[in-house]
Length: 138
Image (cartoon, rainbow, N blue to C red; front, side, top):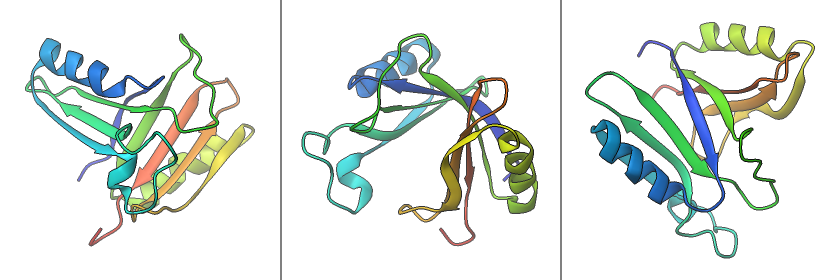
């Protein structure tokens, strides 16, 4: 799979409704995974909240979104990041190193509970980035 760059929007508990709305606007296929689907115990009140949603449209658009996890602040107008994802680990790690240099790493780039390598950082210009490397066989 080629590397992909797309917006990732955070919601204050209404990600399912928002992503279904965007599916109605753009068409395509929406897939969602809830906190309850993750295989580990969901935080109280979060079993049905969206941990990750992805809309793939016939026009080639990709929109990702999720409900903010517990303990994180929702800031309308500043509730998005740019997502880089794919299976070319060397390419994506190279992007990560450059994007995180001089910035702030909030989630180190490391193996996560869903099996991929994932990290979050804010670059030196204040832009949030998420990097997800799909592991072979994951």
